[in-house]
Structures are given as C-alpha cells and as structure tokens.
Image (cartoon, rainbow, N blue to C red):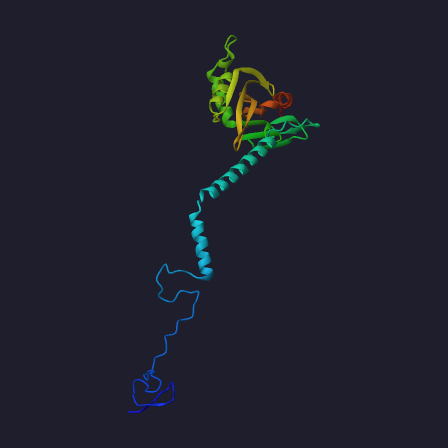
Length: 274
C-alpha cells in the first residue's frame, strides 16, 4: 500500500519505512515538556526538599545562627547589666554619703502635736507627723544619710513606766541598772538591724530636761553593691508627758566629727511645749 512520506514528499511503496529516503513513516510523539522552574516547592514536596532563592538564603542564615554558640551574647548582656548596676550603686553611694550642709540660719519649730519645740537649720529638711495622744515623730535631715530623728509613742511611755516602777534607783546603783538604763537596754534589744553594733557602755545624758541614756553605735547602709559605714547616737528617755522617746542621730562615719556638733545643738535644744 503506497504511503506519502512526510520527510521527502515522495510516495513510498512501504508503509513503515520510506522507500525513497529510508526514514520512518510512523508518527512520533512530541517530547515531554519540563515544568518551568519556581522558587516555591511544588505541592506535596517532601519535607527537607532543597529551598531556592530568598528561601534558601533565609534557611542558610538560620542554620548559621543555630550553629554559632550563643553564650558569648548572653555573657555580654550579663556584663552590661552588671556594669549598669555597679555604676548606679557607685553614684547613689557617692551622692548619699555627702557631708552635712553647714547650718544656715537657726529657726524654732514645733512637733506635730506641739509637744516638743526645737531649733533646726533652715537649710536642712524638717519633717514632722503625729496623732495627739498616740505618737509624734520629728526628723531633721541634710542629704540622704545625715539625720536626727525623734520618735515618741504612748506605748513606749507605758513600757518606760513599767520599767520605772520595777526599778527603784538608789544612790550607788550602776547606771545600766537604773530605770532609764534598763529601758534603754530593752530598746536596744528590739533593733532588727544585723549590722548595728554599740561601742562601749551606755552613758547618762538629758533630753528636754529629763534624765536619759545614750549609746554610740555603728551600722552599715547599702546602695546596691556598695556599703556606707554609719555612726550615731541612740538616746532613750522615760515618760516625758504622755510619751517616752527614742532619738537617733546618725551620718556617714567619716563625717561624724562635723555632724556631731550640729546634732548636739539640735538635740540639746529640745524643750517641752511650744
């Protein structure tokens, strides 16, 4: 059966191979076409298949990050934090431990309940509070750490009264065994400051014309990692009107000689009433 050859255009006597050009007369199927490349994995691609383009760059960056040790970064963060804390502590300690201001003009002021009258420098901070018949509180301060603080309460008055009733002072009684001495010792036992340490024996004194006892002490104030050594007086009185009083005068130890004179003037000038 004759068949037209699509290659040479001649009529072949063979229907499989052209009898003229020898080429196949059978129809050939077109070659399969390859899909166009894409950055996105095809649906159903197996997990872990290689990424392309931007995805490949991101994957490489993440792999590199995970392979890099992280402890140097955390160590740097910790070091920076420590430096900030230490720097803040140093500044706070330096500011707080300044010497007391030289007194300006002295002015007379009264406690909140007008139970006490005292003279204070007008360039020092004066604060008072109270509730008549319950308590009164006075603080005179220069800077952060130089302070004279006077606190009287009715509860302390009752405790002091009990001490006075239980102890009858005799002419030869050691001072620490007198009523005011025993009361002063009891008040010292109630102090919760673990750095508080008294120097020497308690000594007799007066406060607002009343018999009192005082002790010299040292303690520590902390500002972060820095410590400031403090020095002061603790003074106790028996009942003075409705209250018994506890007085604290303290400042950084290195400024004690300057502060002591000012504190002595403030405390020594306290009187009862306006």
